[in-house]
Length: 522
Image (cartoon, rainbow, N blue to C red; front, side, top):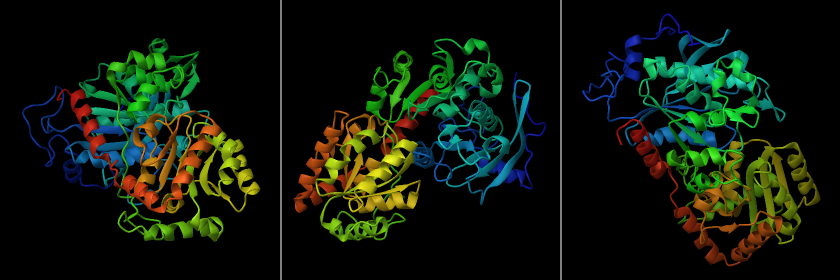
């Protein structure tokens, strides 16, 4: 059944329609740029040399963030603007989002899933790029984004089916697009709906989908019986569709139905095609290897920059590192560690406390690490067992280890600026951003050689280990501690890392080229 649409496509609250058309370059609006060459079905007012992209994402920094996905979606659209692409984002309006400065631009956008009706409305934040928020209080006005106290919401299959259909409504009514760029399992139904229920809809004629996998471990798995609630034909439940070992997988749907796939580093793109890292989807990904790209995430140096960035007690640069000692001293004070740590290596961790992030081998190696006369500060939240283990480590070594449980973005900046070493012992890591931030802050990374960690950290700017064991982690830390003893050489290591450029420039160019190919212009 097709989603019914509002009778009036311009139901807004007290806005000037002409200004609205100009902003969005709607057909007939004063902001339209006429062109003779255009793809079939695209109104003449659209510039065929520009890719119009609507990103569909469950998170977007700084409004809604649990990890690196939000940072990517919050910074990539601006970087794409340098290549002429017109990019907007659509995300749910969660309770935690501050709505100051936003306006409601669509009063009534009902979504039908079979006989069930969900009333949504659309808000807009216009800077630094158009960000549309899908408002449906019964579904998104909750304490958590996906669940609470480590338990997923039982209606997540409905929540993100409605989000997918509402995002398509935004593409129909508010931001006509060439490419729908869908991020992670929460947007996996967008390609499915386009290729099934909306396959004959002229609105989406020529519209292509790119599905980006940020972490294959999170797959959006639900009972097969959920298909009936999603208004999807049972025919999508097949091995080359949404079927996944007796259940349905939203991630599997995105992989199967999207026109192209991407993930967030070249190494991870190769790793997920193997049984070790494929989480049961390696065969499906090998089958689509011809349309799978690995594009390394970039860093937003407007925020993560020791020379100008927020939240740190002193700014510094590669030419003048004096401010970093101030940041270290203040970080020790904030965590309650002794002044003696100023002359020894201080290890920083900002992470989810999970198996993926290496929490198990870190706990295993903790005693050996503190025996090296080093100090450690950790910030994060995650599985309750690991939160308790981190608290226990701090209790056993109160003068060496300090832990804060929770999410604190300003404190994360201070850890990056004040630590000497940054530890990322991940079991797998699609890309990782903290090791990139660490380089810019002159904080030398110690990482496991996997995914994007392997792509970004090389000899001379950081330390890597291969085997996923506490002993291998400990040996890497020992190597870093020995290097720290030579102050002049250590400062050169810091400066080499600070000179690395992992901005969005190169990666945005790769995405832009991919959009152009999908739109038939490459």
